[in-house]
Length: 274
Image 1 (cartoon, rainbow, N blue to C red):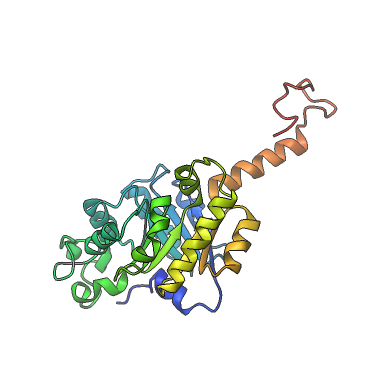
Image 2: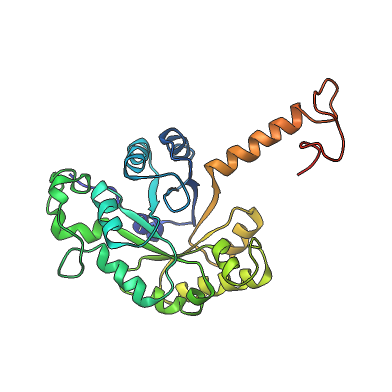
């Protein structure tokens, strides 16, 4: 039995940048809808979302029928958490808040078995090896896993080239939201200084021969970073898409100034503006 190819392998083989989205709802139905959309990759988030081992597993099952790369973000780059995720069958990790090459090197050790790492050995009991149905899983496990680390602070941007140069780090992923916060412009992901830092990180990763991705829910930002050489982008999230689309429906059909509306029009009306 063979496992699917990693996200890193897909990025390397692709003739164009890979476009994906986040699934933050914890719902396997939403994950399956996203997986069947035609996008290249879908990220299950457990850092800022209500996801535990059981819900992650359910979403992996839901996506497994589709030709999409599932990526999972743990809440922290902890060796025990990573061990559990890998045994669960997560092949593609995106680890948040990596600020140094030393931290990146420890993450590489966390995803590898002894001889090159510290991952605990329990694959015969786990989905990672399909319960010992993958031939020579222990010997070849590192080839079935991809590790992407997040550049999310001014500190990380300053050493992005060093982080990218770590053997075993497959890709960088820049998070402009936390990056903006660390630069003193909270909530301003499109601030010129933040954009410059993202572009600097893309350049550093590419110089080290590593692909760089960016979180960019504003289409103009995504296009800017793709033009600058980003190899993959995340352009939306299930919860955000549903929130904005449902608001648009309410605005269209229950406008405060519409005839028959029970909501009085006026400056305090919740549906007069956003």
